Image (cartoon, rainbow, N blue to C red; front, side):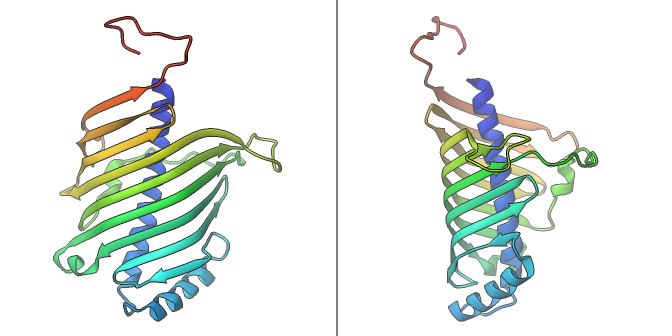
Length: 232
């Protein structure tokens, strides 16, 4: 149970960081355009034409400098296919002038991620948390990822349905990145079998010291039991 929950947390956090990184990049570009729906549509078409099949979406609504709605997102990378039904991003662009990126809501619904085996690539350099340091503070509130499904294709499987490896009902997050310290003000994951909530902080340094507290609950199979005082 602990291994399954740990894998779920890692998958959710990796996906969340990727989506936040993409949202931050798009948000920076949005400052160059007017906060109108026409300006949003024009810039979206230009971005989509540059990205090609790597990142596509079916519909864009809202304004660049307020709340943005995307529908039918598709992300394609070697070994990774992701589809998102709906994404809503709200942020405060004025806060950038005071050295802050303030995201007030990031809601993502209907996420399906398919992983597949790719040809071996050269070994990557070890991950260094210090490389994530940003020149501005980042406040992310109201993050909600709902209905996340992780699928897996085998090394020789190119067609046909993939195997469902993980199902997550919802991931929620409120976080602050300030002075190279990441604070999880509120983080929770809920799966059909149970869930967990986490509070704490992590310093973006080479050894990345952690100070976390977690609570979790899990449904055991009917033929399993936990003795009093034992850890599941």
